[in-house]
Image (cartoon, rainbow, N blue to C red):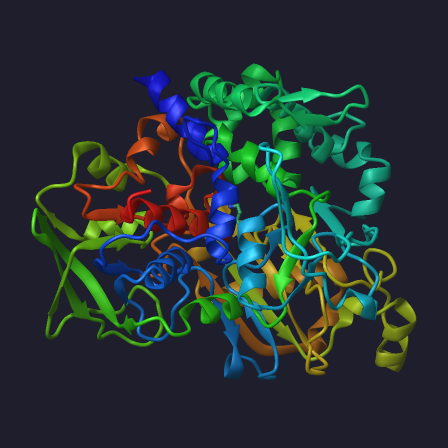
Length: 583
Ligand code: ARG
């Protein structure tokens, strides 16, 4: 049974089937209107959840002639974990910042092709800081996907975008030492030694090397040290074997047992590479994360805010907001869904209430495209199959926390002489070396705030200020931020920035800050599914499985390769539409 599950999950991860069909290719064509769902009798479909997964699914079904209605719990907006803070949240209402999805790796072709198809403008997102320059304003609109079938999908002929060389001017601040990322890369030993790890490798290189054992299951190493994918049949069997061998491993156990790492190395690399809070999670998640989040990856962001994508998806869809689904009844004749009005305050904190007059909806089928944890609070009759109930009750949902702080001017783009000119007689040097003017990139620290990200672009409409993601935390780190009051989160994050860049930054801070806890968001109930050891095989196969040809499931939790990414939500939404219309 474990072998069977490993094969099923391997196919899901690689988006393929028993015939080695390339589903990414099919999904790209469906999303961009080059291919259609299988025609059939029109069905009445209720989609629950107006996040990316639900709206993608709804749009495909509408285009295929089905009668679709979308129910969304949130009264104030659609989009789910795509959420942009804008307008009068900020002192300068021209600014916006992302509470959720903010960066799209260039390999996430489903997301980029969909956005381009909907004419949602995008531009580079700089994970590594680069010099400010006007030519960074737009990335090209070309998406290229080369399938193992030999087929190529592309949306244009512009040359591929290549990111400029990074500066490495942002800071690493651990164990009381503060150095630039470039200085750490040039000589990692002093920082490493502060953890008791006497190594001349960077943390990133050490972690990358540790993943070679996992890579070798599905890839071959070339003479020059680079890796290439094995043929698809071997990739599927290799991935299944990887799952079989290592799904039971936490990241910590893998690093200790398989790679022989010392505690000091685990702590050093974990702190610098954002792994410490997740050492107890399933190892495979870190394998996927590492290929999506690393300085070699090129990213895009949506120029007008990520919610430009979800607003474009919502356009012309029949969405009823403020409808909280509480009950689903299904039988041979169809599905009855009960929803109650959302009556709490407009914000999405945990204090809201539901109640008032219920409504009932009747349909042939329902697509449940809400976070998996939310299904725990829906009453299903008849009972869902045992495996699915277990998955709903047990699968691990991680949390993430972001603190966003507004500044009246973009001091991170200044060099030391600009600081001198701005401050005049009040000028004091920066605490950790001269300012390196740059956009994008961020700092890593072992303080509570952990990760700082600077905006990749100035505001489009000439606003002089900007919003810094002053603390971005996952898992245990995020849980601790969750416990603070909003005011204390701000103080913590601002004190941390002042420690890194000097008290001089405080004069540009407005009193505006917004924080987002995805765990304490009543409709999200967590950041995303990130399995604990063993769950990928024991629970994973049950997550997306349809029930009785009436209930279908969508959301990034259904796509194990892309948990916590828009690409996973999109793939799952397409898949549910395909299942519903008979493949
Ligand atoms: N996509 C999100 C990001 O860019 C999260 C990715 C990883 N998520 C996670 N829970 N490990 O930060």
